[in-house]
Amino acid sequence: MNVSSNIAAAAAIPSIRVDLQQVADLVPAGSRVLDVGCGDGTLLAYLTRFKQVDGRGLELSMAKVRAAVSQGLPVIQGNLETDLKDYPTGAFDYVILSQTLQATHNPRAVMEELLRIGRRAIVSFPNFGHWRVRLSVMFGGRMPVTPMLTDAWFDTPNIHLCTVHDFIDLCRLMKVRIEMGFALDAAGQRLGFAATGKRANLLSEQALFVLTRA
Amino acid sequence: MVPDIATSPAPATRGLPAQDLKLTLESPLVLQSGIVLSPVTLAYQTYGTLNEARSNCVLVCHALTGDQYVVGNNPTTGKPGWWDDLVGPGKIIDTNRFFVVCANVLGGCMGSTGPKEINPATGKAWGLDFPVITIRDMVYAQTKLLDYLGIKKLFCVMGGSMGAMQVMEWAVRYPERVFAAVPIAGSYRHSAQNIAFHEVGRQAIMADPDWAHGNYLAENKIPKRGLAVARMAAHITYLSEAALHRKFGRRLQDRETLTYGFDADFQVESYLRHQGYTFVDRFDANSYLYITRAMDYFDLAQENDGVLANAFKGTPVRYCLVSFTSDWLFPTEESRAIVRALNAVAANVSFVEIESDKGHDAFLLDEPEFHQTLQGFIEGAAVSLGLPTRSTL
Image (cartoon, rainbow over all chains, first blue to last red):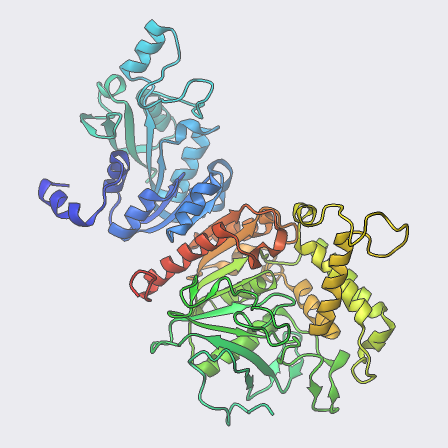
């Protein structure tokens, strides 16, 4: 998005969290989208309103589902690890999984489902290879608590944390094509280099990938 | 005298809640069983005004013992309509914007053709000569009413319990006539447990000597005891253990100690007896048999080779399913099965389970989260269809 369109949009389009905006910018207008772990539907509402997507949401928390449906969004309560199998193959142009992969029991199986249901998957996760994480373990001798990993080890929902390199390895193993990869800071702003490059594993706090099987 | 369709006044497009509207169909109704039923009359109410495009109609489907009096004073009971909280000017189903229609179901006893109406072949009440009807038949009859009103497509069809069954039937059988469907506290089929409870109710009615093999009207009797027991048993299934406990606990009724007899010592007994006896005054025993049977026969999966998802293939209908945590008659799992089947065809579906300890009846009660969810869905659907919304009005 260039500066002038940003200004033009500012009046009409409410701002959403930077990391959600990064995801939203990757979705072409009019797409069919499934937002897995859609929360209260912030991203879905934005995509529906400003990108005219045909969107659906799946969310674990019933309170968040109620909040989403109360905005008129087609969101259902469900568990992504058991319920993605219900969706037909190729039903969506984009399946979005934002900051959730690391909290799943079987990330590989979840990735398989995302790429079965959608022609493309947009996946973001905190990078466990970031220097702050490494320093915390190496010199602090303790599990990291960072802007991206805010919970203490005994409180965190994250059970399958990975580094950017780990994730790229998994994609290779699964024969998944990485169409785009963005290195992001903790706020979700793009850093000046690709997630697939050398620096991302050390310098990005989170990463955002567009994946496809096609 | 019921006006024939040909001689009926122009369709009422403005709600006249005080007026009991009736439509007698021009042609006989071919039922799912193959039996041809004639004449068929539907008693219905409308609220609000039909817009010029005839696109703002909300069809409300009532439950087993419900009726067409959704709002306002019910002429039989003198109480407010069963969805008075939800439907009306400025309410969630805003009659300033929507044209609301509700018809007494086929087989009912509030003016629509049912076992207590006169069989023209005999000049007597139908009784057990009335053909067994199904949810499909009820909905088929409703399509005729909408044809008469000139409504090709519903903005929304909604209802709870048996109403939800009709909603499902509408959305599956006539997807081109439904924009949005809201089945609440319902299912795609009646479970074995539900059939079992209905059978208890039917047996109670039939065990009453005053039922007279279904011929009680001709013999000037009413199977009051049997029907009351049926209602008492059913009423328990509409509540929850928590709700019963909160309402009554083990408190005694107008007495300090146990009587060591079989009077209604406990408040809960007295309450149930009251529920049973007041029901008798407003409901026909044979209607109860027929309508419970219609629910028992309902199974959308079975008629699609056992695969519910097949019922929804290519559906353009947007669904909103609602269930309640303490509803053990139509538990959340039933709604979830529908959601799964809708997901299997990537349909447009919203699904929420509302936290409530009020059991199945929660859909009739003031449950703020339920109402909030419903309002969100209705407004979202109105935006999509270009109908006025709360904010644009």
